[in-house]
Figure 1 (cartoon, rainbow, N blue to C red):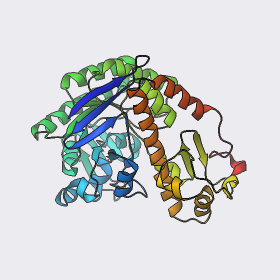
Figure 2 (figure 1 turned 90 degrees about the vertical axis):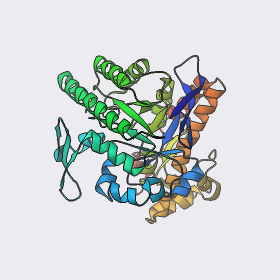
Figure 3 (figure 1 turned 135 degrees about the horizontal axis):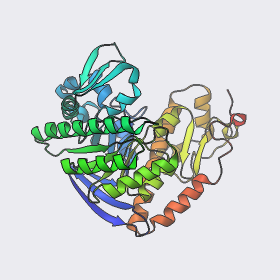
Figure 4 (figure 1 turned 90 degrees about the horizontal axis):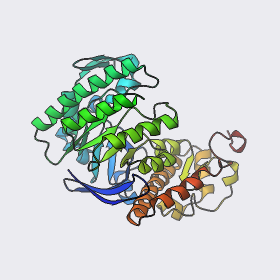
Length: 385
């Protein structure tokens, strides 16, 4: 993998760049839609191409359990399996160590867990995680880690960080033993909300040597001020000439703040998850399409948006689809929401190339934070049951 920084902002740590992974070129900062089970919910691969997606995320844990990495390998890898011509980043399964706590036990050799599907037992080691990601044909592989929850006492966070580092070394050895090829592997910084632990973790990951680095264990319930302190810590501790991936942070406001602090890659389920519940994302804020105010509105979801949905159908029509339970409603909103996120990234990259990122950031944040739109999700007076 090659990574070049193409532009910076003198007032901030923000930068734009280009990642070259094999035949794939990805402009950064970039947002990855989440295709957990080899599918970005409700969207086809050709939808994603039309929308401008260059890199998406798939879930190692879920694909390992079903349909199985060997089956996907035999069918030509994940790119062919899901007919996706772009790049793929696969997580390591580490987040499931946290989220499936009742089903697992962390051991020195790896994570022993029971499948949430059939109760079968598995031992997920750093070597197996890397092997599974290679079988899937991932372009960017993540080293197996332990996602530290919040809150977490310092002693426990230190133990989990040490285990993450041991696993990172093993993941890296396995990756290099297979030749690596055109693929890249990222190490993940852990350490809870303890700056000294995160600094130590980052330094040791850099000494192991990865093509890129991720900040993990954030957006797990911690206060926003603490999160940004940890992100700034990561910016200081990680090499400037490598891509940085802030895992799981995906509100538009948070992406702007993270780019401001030197981050390059982002993923989140919000565009598609919100779409299934009627949430419309725009660069002027978000609102619920279910609100009565849209029942006779002939206008587009977002007058500023260039997506196919906004160019062809009305708010009234999309609201109708939700009212009658048609599957097309979430599909249309997912299409629009993913495009809204990509438009945000395009605006960020353009402002960085033109040297006006700070102006763009302040302007966009002001629009997003001006007021809560009266028909936003949760303002029950505007929604019908």
